[in-house]
Length: 375
Ligand code: HEM
Image (cartoon, rainbow, N blue to C red):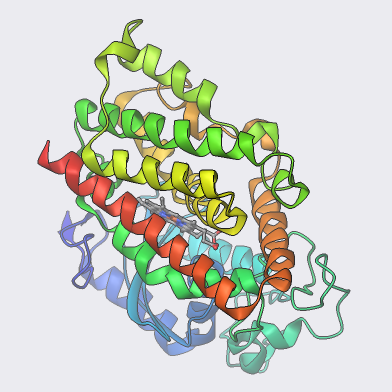
């Protein structure tokens, strides 16, 4: 077993059964022969605005890339599509599968063969690889009606573009991604992702979610009559029943008397209630977006880890089960489309105010994690 070099990220010390020489060979091959594929992969999996990327490591469950974008340098860990691997040939298979999944998400035609991305045999050429945007040219109209999200696949990631296309959802995502990284990198999230959180810590997370969603879903109900909002809030998204189910399982029948919010959760819920009382729709949507799109993204990764660590099936992690929502990627895409439509109705100052509220929402989440750690 070898330690994998994961840079300065929290994946430091991840253990792999791959030899350091294998890792060096794979990263060397990717960086030497497939630099455009690195970029495609990171753009598709979390860093749509990436301008540069190199592969810096891998282990049994994921590859690790270093990413550069307008907010600086980040690391992105992308899980292997087939789950855990242990044999060297599986690495190649998984990297190819990731490349193909990235092409599909970005609406870029994939190469037939796993040829070097800069070579003659390359179906979309190095230039297209570097700019998935270019491959979108000529494709159908945007499902959101303003062309900015036009892509080969109606299910493609609408953010799969290198440049800022002016869409509001793109603006929100890129302007707040640094705040996202802060929340994601908090030690509670880190412990859960590394499967070293205690059951008590996980239960406490569910408890904090209960108080957050109590406020969020009450506020949502109050604003449900607004049709701009109704589109974002189908019944299958509502989490209160799943939280009750999880708490009954995790805490017991008397769960309601046993649980308590940390101070940051109280402040977070207060802020949501304040926005609802004011009737500030974009502000509520900022909080709605931050929580639900998170649950549909990183939340799904959390659920996998928790299930595995604690042997849960549904009870205990019902909160993360959005089966009734249908295809999650498609839902997120439509959600972003509604954000874009909303953005078109707001002036620049109001758009910025909403982006600031998304930032505030991330901060509340990070502060909740800090309070949870304090105990
Ligand atoms: C272990 C912790 C986390 C991980 C691994 C994680 C991972 C990710 C990933 C990979 C995406 C991109 C998904 C995609 O493009 O389809 C994403 C998106 C998102 N995450 Fe997280 N996340 C974590 C924690 C959080 C937290 C704590 C929040 C806030 C409460 C959050 C909110 C969001 C939001 C709002 C998005 C959607 C961004 C957009 O596309 O506009 N995440 N997350």
